[in-house]
Amino acid sequence: MSLKDWISKRLKKNIKLAKHAGFCYGVKRAVETTKKLKSENQDKEIFVLGELIHNSHVINELSNLGIHTVEELPENGNAICVIRSHGAAPEVFETTKNKGYEIVDLTCLDVKKVQHKAIQLVQEGYLLVIVGKPEHPEVCAIKANAQIYGKNVIVAPDVTTLKISEEEIKKHKRVGVVVQTTQRLENLQGIVNYLLPVAKEVKVFNTICASTSLRQNEAKNLAQESDLMVVVGSKKSANTTHLAEILTGITDTIHIETENELKNFEDLIKKSQNIGVTAGASTPDAIIENVMKELNKYDT
Image (cartoon, rainbow, N blue to C red; front, top):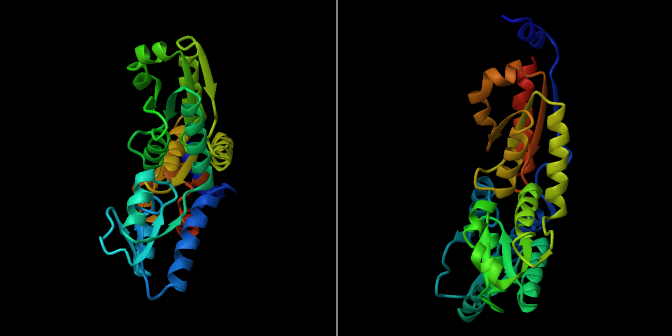
């Protein structure tokens, strides 16, 4: 056993949870409102079109309450349809209304702002660049809302992808940029830096939400004083995976969905003296608490 391991084994571990970990405002609003809808409408079916948030434990909890998560709504519309926090395309609202559903729109207010900025840029004649993952539901909704007013829209997760459209960018000359709310600032900066010498005019709206920026900055600071960072949240959650990507460049980092996965990293946890914990915006408090309890067992 090395001296470092010997000392680590005998010193009390410092396990610190980030202050801004777990549900953000938009997610909390979506989950609490959906549960309240069911409690106040026991006689009505409630459908959520797509996963309300990217967390399987929350989806299972909603299912146990009788709230149905579906990819396509039944034709019989005598029910309530919840639009999830990521938003939806205008045609989704129209189709749902035409089927007879009562619509409850729980699109995150920050996502709504991105949609409005995207529409504004298209209406002003800019070629719109959406920085984000093309397949992500939030990005799909932003794109669909913007394309009602013009078809000149490009979705780019990174500079490499955007370069494919360089000729189109040069042709339009005026480029407007919005960004998926949970993206990394570094990714936005990289794309803007690429666009500046290519386009004649670049108009940028930094639409990364305040909660995402705060969470990422706090986690980075915590990582700088930690031997190990534990990121808790769904592998499907964009903001959680971005957290893990950022922290991996600072210190040893593991990304887990529940406390059960900690056993896979037992050696790393045992040798780490200072452990920081953060969690994505769609991670329930109960899961974070279970992770903290499990980590503290390594301190006995």
